[in-house]
Length: 125
Image 1 (spheres, one colour):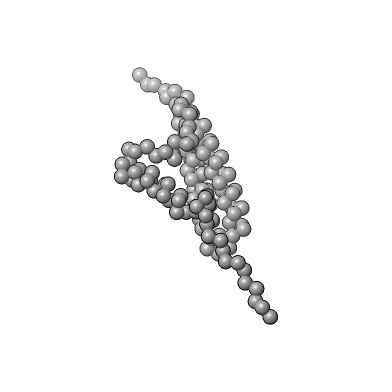
Image 2 (cartoon, helix red, strand yellow):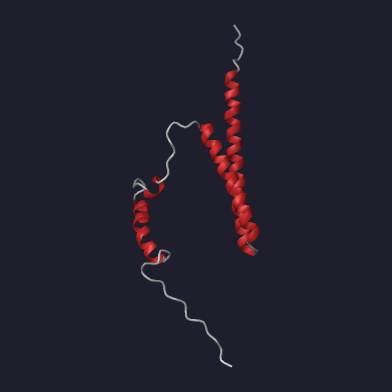
């Protein structure tokens, strides 16, 4: 009886987009330039921007919704994983929940400070 052996794995070609070597050759100069000079613009961070002048409450509200979505995504992922990978996903999920709690508290603080400023303190003469 002959043992059937699979073909050896194919070696990645130069055009393979997932090949880590060309990717690191591209990203390394940008990262090292940023580390050498913190004032050097980080090209990756300028892809997405927030419109200037957006109210803090709006920003916190969107951050809270984003963290809630992240919480759901990570919880779903953790349910599909096992052992240490599941523990890592649950740790990330807990960090997302803590961040969401912090954002909610910041929103509460803003609401309470606005309510306090709306009430005029009585003045005594």
